[in-house]
Image 1 (cartoon, helix red, strand yellow):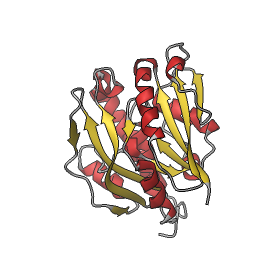
Image 2: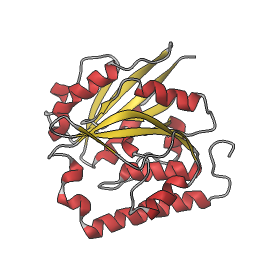
Image 3: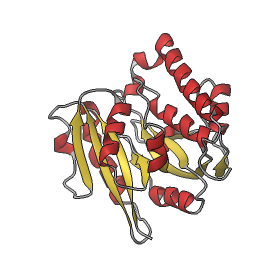
Image 4: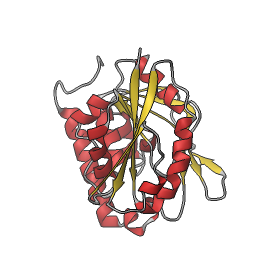
Length: 252
């Protein structure tokens, strides 16, 4: 077997200096023989601030585009993604050892599954880490379970969209990331869950960096009116997909 995993990273200028740490975590990944990764970096904007931090590596593809937030940048990056599988990696986050191999194994060993996620630890500014106390058990996640949990827990899923690993064709069929100013990754996760079973790996797969400049720290991220609108369209999309007869991935 041979293949490529396309790692998709959206980046804007304030987070560009974290790219070397993300790259180091990619270089530390060990994959089965015949497999390698491709890193697709898409700048959300057209500045001169990001390119100096992009590694000089033939496996790295970099481009820029008009500002449109992370979802637009990632979806533009899909045009250069050559892999059968896609992995999300935010510019300011780092993968843990073995994360890509575990994701790959989850889907190659279970061809009826469309996506996989893993445990996350928040990486605090002082270097300490904080875990989530409601992780599901390792194993399959039934179709629709993420939406049900999300609705019952104040729009918080039991798995983290920043760890998403998915079949490229399925992501394309769903239209990529949602055209929202935030929660676009949650929108894709719920859409995937609406049409396919997934997988959760209990081993930590990502260190999710917390820092003052990250977009989710901005007051607009929790502004009541916009948040309600985001959640409404995310839920409506997932519910509509779930209701379509015959629109399913896999055998169950």
